[in-house]
Image 1 (cartoon, helix red, strand yellow):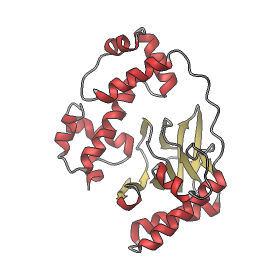
Image 2: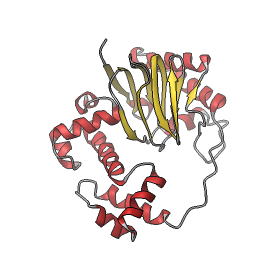
Image 3: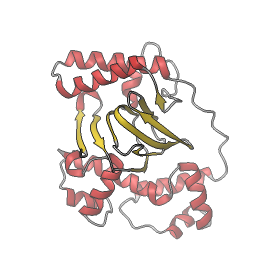
Image 4: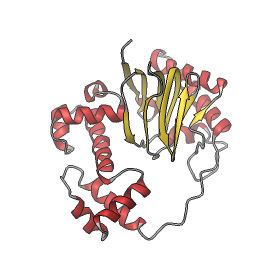
Length: 268
């Protein structure tokens, strides 16, 4: 038994990314998505840290991560796990419930592991349809119905946010700087000066508020930018140089740790 990965995109659904994979030794680094991450575990089990707790998604369960929430992922059993994943943009869920979702907030799912046979079946059929069917009406219908059922059955209240602390603005300044200067080799001292905090306090506070250390956040910004350049068809070596990675090998290692696929697989 070996690891297998199939990755593709559905441009008609806000460039929806899909993954069908078996992982055994692969381990996802701690990262976030701009989209939801929704998957059905078909075999084995996956373990991941999310919102301050460790969760295990076993065969038959649905794993669900909200946008912007840091998490990782690795095998919970010796044989690894096989799953089908979708990464839908917020707009897809909003459109699915346009007639009934009146909240200004995006749908939020409080439970990262869901046991729901009906929803599991809907997600699997949707995933296979997007992989194999050429009927646009079938794809559209399954997408709208599945996302609507997901929201109706499992969306809940977002946890109440604590009042913003005085260090929130300095941390946002550092995030903005890293997002604008992702290709540069910034130092901790430079970031501390921008935030007007000591290096140690910046490290501690940044990790607490963002869920990642500054270098982890920078790495993620670079990888998200790399994905956009790869979609445009740029050579991988050029993408590595433009996004601040030491070389193509460095980009490849980091890219696979976050997405589960290599830059070449993603681009194809």
